[in-house]
Length: 291
Image (cartoon, rainbow, N blue to C red; front, top):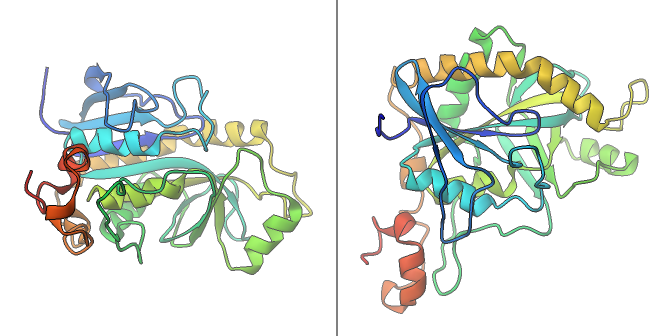
């Protein structure tokens, strides 16, 4: 079995619970200081490179957006040495020009969730991570290029608002988000993107537009059946895009600062960090706080 560190982590959302085409596959059941990840992590080869796949909502989709253990998921990828994560997720469009069946690579994010653990830090160790640009610009650009190469109509840029769920929006909420200038709406990017930044992992989202939410008066309101139908139609394109991305990951050096995002974020005097917390977060902080 090949034990090289994966070059990419893939988080599959609604409708994508496995990744076809992997070879030399192994399945890992991991434990983290934050509990178990949503599913076993499947590691395999694409184009001679190792990638790791995790089903965000569990195999069979039994974990709601609020109940996803985002910290365990990201921590598990960090423990495996994953330097980049691509999230594949469903979204609703809040714009006429982002149509169902198309893909958006967003560049901005608004957190409208209320009930989720948003950080690895706390319990005596404080870090103020910078997320002015919450999606890695380098990985996002590579992902956009890969989606185009896969022949899927894609849009580069846009603001993704994350709501708590699991319910869909009211019409009033949908129109409010449109008035704020939001582009697409989903339920899982937050705190996933922020935790990836804390873990110094590049993170980008391939958002599949499945519907027009509920604001579009001439279109059918969003439903589970509509979301799944569109996602299944797009699965082949998403997998082709990931394969193209993996093939070209090392063509150019990254230009982002994701891999040292914590360098100026930790504010707590190391001498005052409780031993238990120091041990719990060693994987994330060992470059900056000696054990």
